[in-house]
Amino acid sequence: MTVTKTPGSLMRAEIAEQPDRWLDLIRTQKDAIDEAAALITVERPEMLVMIARGSSDHAARYAQYLAQQMLEIPVQLSTPATVTVHGAALRYPAAVALAISQSGESPDLIETARSCQRAGVSLITFTNNPQSALARLGDVQVDLSAGVERSVAATKTYTAELLALLLTLARVVGRSWESLTAEVDKAVAVARGLVRGECDGGLVEGLATTRRALIVGRGYSMSSAQESALKLMETSAIAASGWSASDATHGPLGQIEPRVPVIALTSVPEGRESVQAFALAAHQLGGAVHTFGPAVEGLSAVEPVLTESHDVWSPLIPLLEIIPIQRLALSLSLWLGRDPDSPAGLNKLTKTT
Image 1 (tube, rainbow, N blue to C red):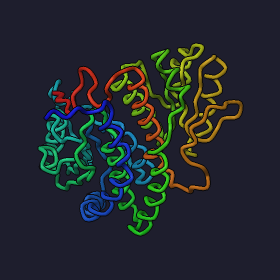
Image 2 (cartoon, rainbow, N blue to C red):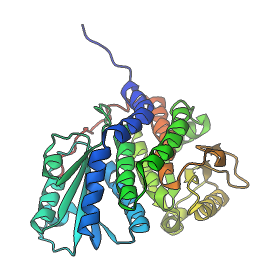
Image 3 (cartoon, helix red, strand yellow):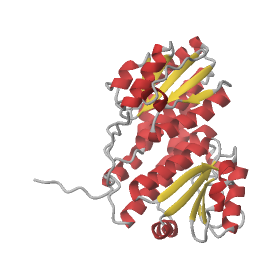
């Protein structure tokens, strides 16, 4: 008998799983995360190198902000084409590479990781498949513990990457597992409400009508802005872009026209003022501004995400603020008569070379 799958059912289920998958990760991966943290501590690197593509690249950018703030060393986002297209053999100062991939099978990431190892750089891998080619390369491997993700649009694997990277860096700087578990438990409690939330119908309709969106964040939330744009593009084929609020005050602000949806991510306290300032500037140009987080004075369309009473640790907020965007991408795709689980022309594994 043929089983008919309801469009979006996989993505909906995987969004809802996220709080439980975070708990699975912290329960099962303490030893691996401690091993990864110990490697970084012993190596005492002068820099970290992040190897990633797509959603994982957004997770890498999040880790770039975290590591530079926590470890006070520079973090380089690798450019795989330097190795796979141009054939360069890079030399590194004392470094540790972190390779991040949901599948662990992307050829360009594998070759970039090998290139780092040939240069004498130790490798930590973060994948959702511990048997993957990339995972097997790692001096240490951390399993994302997200379970099989069947929808093309990454949801639970993305937030698992954020959490695994945060926990690793936090252990490097000496945060105890007791304190980290307490912080994650608070985030999980908020996430359980977010995965059951409803989307703003006006925002869904506005996106469906204009087929455009601009999303802005700052600091930790810049990765959320970029991941948000990717989710909207891949599930609904709209023209979306994600920016740091500071960069968006240049060209992107000039592209705002009446009724164009603008999503401002204001939940992270650090950098909030510049996001709010951009939101007001976009509103003055006629943009349909929606704040995901604390309200901006004079603007009414708000998805609260969390309140001050939740007392969530700032580095965990990107795991929470992306959930309403995931739900939005799901709702918009269905509104447009599409199936977000199987977007036209896209596959779960992109084998870039």
